[in-house]
Amino acid sequence: GGIRFAACTFNNSSTQKEYSRGIGIESHDAGYTIDNFCTEDIIPCPGQQPSIFENLDYGIRAFNNNDYFPILVDSSDFIHNRRGMYLSLINHPMVIKNRFDLSDPAGIWINEPIIGLYLDEFTTGYVVEENQFSCSTATSESFGIHLLNNGPAQNEIYYNSFSFLSTGIMAVG
Image (cartoon, rainbow, N blue to C red; front, side, top):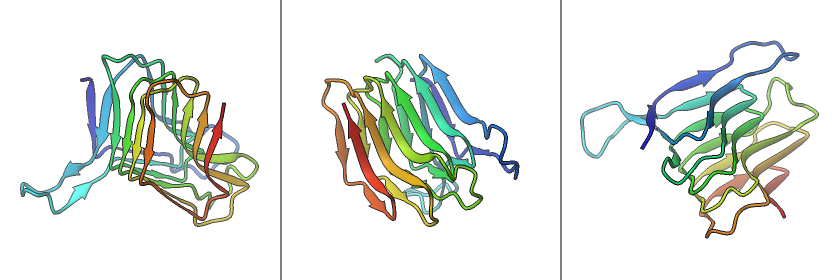
């Protein structure tokens, strides 16, 4: 259910460091799918255009979802964001086959931790599979996945890759 965002680009190309970098998608009590788009009418699809979130404070920031409107983020690119995805109080989100580049080549967040996927405050029943978390430039701190006080439903983090980060997965609470 909900809206489908396919092959959308959310990019802040400003070189200013002192101001907010913005948010790609912010949602409250909403469900949606973010994924790629097949560029040719051939099955299986030989060329896919991903959704891209680049140079933002938050690629996606979502709060208080309910079971009727799930969030699925599939095959998208999160590049040079302070937080790729931040999910709070979300039930059953699926985050699969995404690429998180946690580099900060412009030095915008030099004194702040950079986090690819932040699952906060009773986010529960999540599936996080086949994502790539990497960093190619020195940053103060970089976390692939940060978990804080997650809920009691069965949660799964499976077959993700982490490279050149200060911490792959940080779990608290």
